[in-house]
Image (cartoon, rainbow, N blue to C red; front, side, top):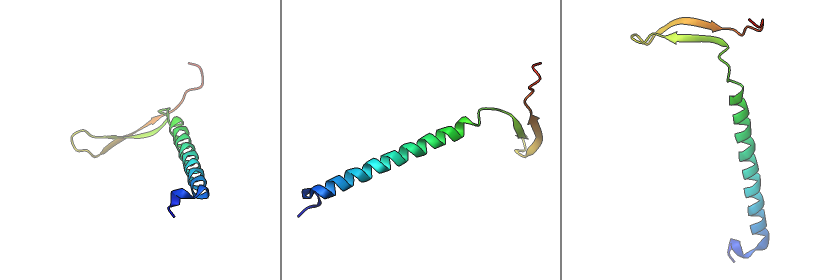
Length: 68
């Protein structure tokens, strides 16, 4: 008897595939949401010297909500 001759095995396999597909979709959606939150340059950034490739300076970018 082969695994494909049993109906229960086929149903179990398709159910497993659907669950894995749903899990993959959920993971992709959560990764997209995580990257969507980093669209702003606000924060502290470190610059690197082009010649020495060593850290050179820290640049702090802040958001100005005063409307100016």
